[in-house]
Image 1 (cartoon, rainbow, N blue to C red):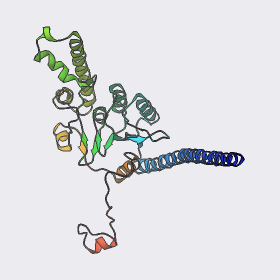
Image 2 (tube, rainbow, N blue to C red):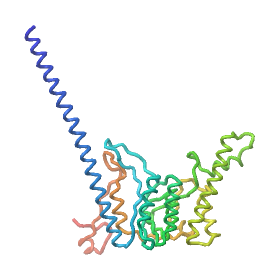
Image 3 (cartoon, rainbow, N blue to C red):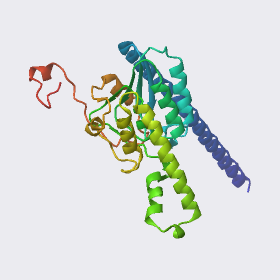
Image 4 (cartoon, helix red, strand yellow):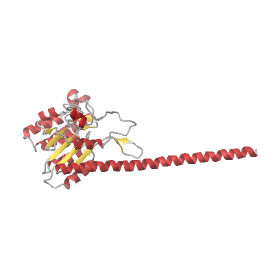
Length: 303
């Protein structure tokens, strides 16, 4: 009995030690994760700020970035979808207020869209700025992002970048489709809720079209501005329809494709997500002496 009691005490002691060790390892991992997240985020922020300063120096402008990615924003790596928010509009408006009236503004824009109110506030501030406003779209600026781009004097896009329609969405449904319900069904078979939604949808379409028209009057005649605003806001396409560079030029928008390299470098500092491995991988081509000796032949690279 005495020997059994000793063995039980020894086993319990080892169990306690193992438990203490496991808890210590757990808290060390938590602390390490916190430190890594804190300093890793600061390192990225510093690199982004340095690139923005270089861009400002080269272009003698105020550079503002509005970039929405799916990034890990919590210490436990929970990913959230970003979009244009009231916080974004407050920050952009503050940056514009701090910019001298005659100084050019360069806005680097990458977003799926967001709140109409926030996008309208940013657009209005940009269109009223006296200095030249240039919007750079390296990949896409959809919905509210397109609305912001329409306020620019020049829209610089990658040749494969896209904008999109600005038709309003009511409760996650396109306003144009809600309005069409009134024409497709007999009024007696439509619920009061749907009729109210249709009324709201029609008002939203008129309001957005009127706002877009005011933005476009900065660079085109009123008749053309009304026509383009109607095309973009009436719901003739799905909300995610990509408007490519040639189509935008046909609408009379001031689109160019001379995208500065620094914009792509900045996008590299906004990772798409923190998965186990990247979903796309490739070996970057390095342009150097061997390629020049080979006459710039495709595929030539340094060894």
